[in-house]
Length: 93
Image 1 (cartoon, rainbow, N blue to C red):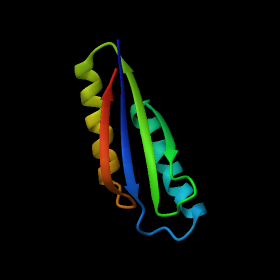
Image 2: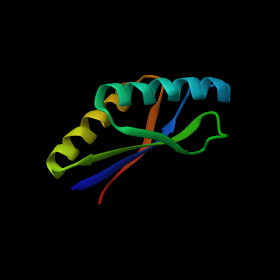
Image 3: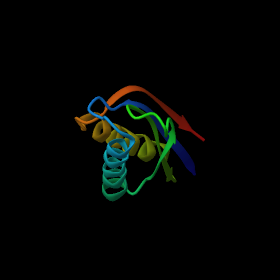
């Protein structure tokens, strides 16, 4: 069994309030959960309105499958025009 986590440091350029930031992140988290059935959470910078750390976790019986899934969800986050990825890190346990 493989547990994998991807963490993104995000910049939300168009945000002017925490309410707007939360709406964008909620939409992004819902898309990730709905399309790929992964666990997603905002893990840092909750009180900063143009910055966020978002993490997604995947449990799989096969590391290759986990890598492919993380690659797809990374592409989904990268394609969202409301956020810009500053950094991303992937962990496998």
